[in-house]
Image 1 (spheres, rainbow, N blue to C red):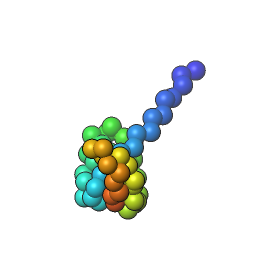
Image 2: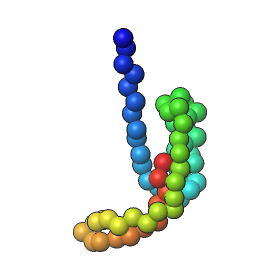
Image 3: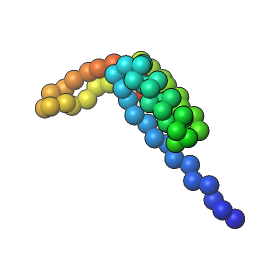
Image 4: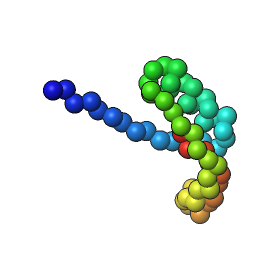
Length: 59
């Protein structure tokens, strides 16, 4: 019996428009069966040696 492989890939973007572009592209190119966009979320992270915060959208 063949075993199906399921992959989950996530990324974040600074704008909802960028998230929608990624979602439309991967689904339109049949690279994903579907895409879900959530947010906005506040992220806390190190960037260029400094503690930073930003609002992001998860795809």
